[in-house]
Image 1: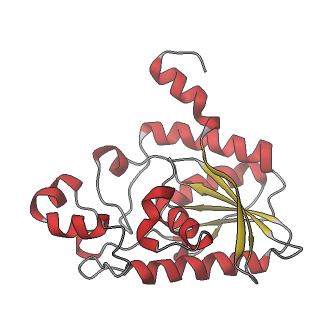
Image 2: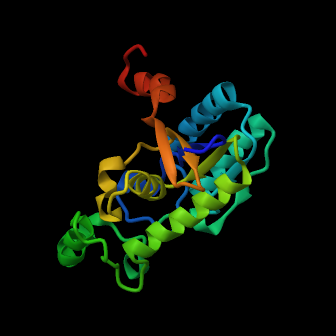
Length: 221
């Protein structure tokens, strides 16, 4: 790794109504759930307290990510910079459909998506797995190159974070499921775009949501 790696603070957006009812949400916009609204406040406070020195905030323009980024920016004093390449994978004709429908009417497609050896898998009229991986690599490198030696907050989607971790570990993008992170979690990575070498400092950290979890279960944090 070079002398001035960029610290990437990768935040997955808070929970959405589509997450709750189990819909395949790529570019389909979905509002935050009631739980997601509470998560936004907690993750924004955490990023501000622990990483208020962030040089910039980048975000997917999709509402679930943008709302999360705006809450962080309201505390850190940054206006989120919206980048289309930070959007989730595009699932084409299946985008926004319930997983229950996919399991019954499109079981072959779902099986293809879940095959960890199918790096070439493509949803009908959608984005290829390899194309998505290249998009993620491109946007992360663009952000890192603009901020050598700095920490930046990037609010995006679970698929983007997971696929970037396959890139960092030199794995097939089809193996993204091993790197899935919770809603409103923080993944911290030191990344050098020149060498494409990185170090995972934390993965899917959701400790800042403990108070919410305790409230929901009636237990102490």
